[in-house]
Length: 292
Image 1 (tube, rainbow, N blue to C red):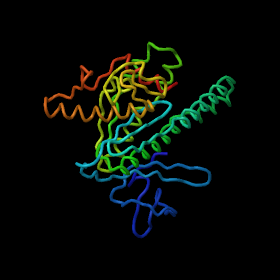
Image 2: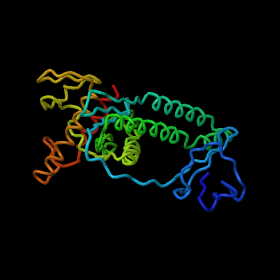
Image 3: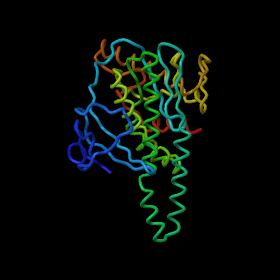
Image 4: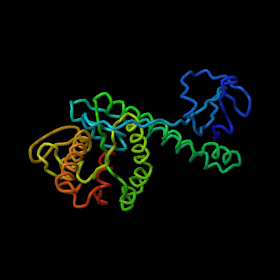
């Protein structure tokens, strides 16, 4: 239930928190300053009511020193991150998210097949359940990623710009198209961006072209370098986890693009004719590899 600050609820020193003019007792002491309160949502879970309070924060100045964190996004692993300071790796599996979403869709399909009035009412109550589960888990994943970046002293988080990946999947099979269309990559990037900026960490998107195929050691690019979650360069023999290799390539691409911007006035990187663009073939290739 949406509730609006200073319309549906208010706070005074004498009465405390009031909803529609009636004082309410709050058990959680972690209340932000009243001056920063904005619109919010009121939810009931069991016998308890929860106020999901939106409040305004002051974004600090971005850091000028620290390492760079490269993040590879996928369906099987939501986030895989490495940093330029040490060998610590962060991964957040997509198993729980994918499993819960499949379960919700199967349940909805069974209910819908009944065709009764009660089943239609149940479907109405279930509407939006999958989106809520997705949002909740993406918040958890993005929060843990930013905490990892903080722990390694990062000044910048770099991810891939996958803006046309859904259009690129139209030529693929129905199952692949469905999985990519349901992949909440944009939501995850949005959550990471604002959570990172609140911690003085800047956020950047780079071209994903060949990040899954290129070797971070010698630069050799070949689609055969990657086989599922395993990577082995056919030229120099470098081996590793494919998602970790991709995250290292993303991190390195940020450094190269910024160097080119300073020296040549362009963000173009080697092997990327157009800045921040990805071909249809490369987009679907990057996504399909993580489904193996």
